[in-house]
Length: 257
View (cartoon, rainbow, N blue to C red):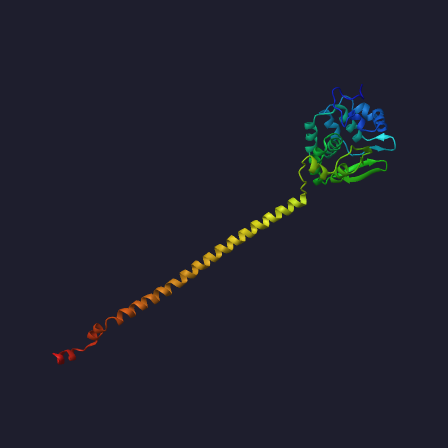
């Protein structure tokens, strides 16, 4: 009973969820000490504590021994938690091995469109991961692990269900086109440059307006002075008799009298 799938579990890809792990590997997991002592009676909540303690990902090492990672993956397939719980596992950034475990489970059990939507954002996660395999420990990265889940047929010694190409899902199921982080950065850079050019244009316009205002102010006193001179000239030229009468001497006035 300890190795049977929980009652009421839904078939995954038309089969028992635990059958997604190959029969030989599944038997080795059931016979392992870790499965009998640490995985017994685990729930979706208590499994988090076990996943946090993981220090590596992988399938089988030393020819016969299953890793703790693959054992917890089989336990998830056995208890089949709700989708919302798996998504919460995936969104916890603090515990990277819990995220890797959730990503592996989502790749094996979720719909193809959901796999792309949930796993592609993790391609921006560049944290280091330890991998335990037949050749011992090695170093990998989260984005490399996610890329393998999306493009390779076998990961951690498990044959993954077939995943259609992204282009096919975009045409058939209306999957939104993927936007890479590089494209987002380029669009943000273009928007910043366009805002900078608009600011430069507005500043140049304000500078030109201020210059034109200063020029008009500097020109106005000379124009006023020339206008006053012209008014005085016109005033003098229009009154010649008055100027002659003012310049006449008293002697001339006497002779005329």
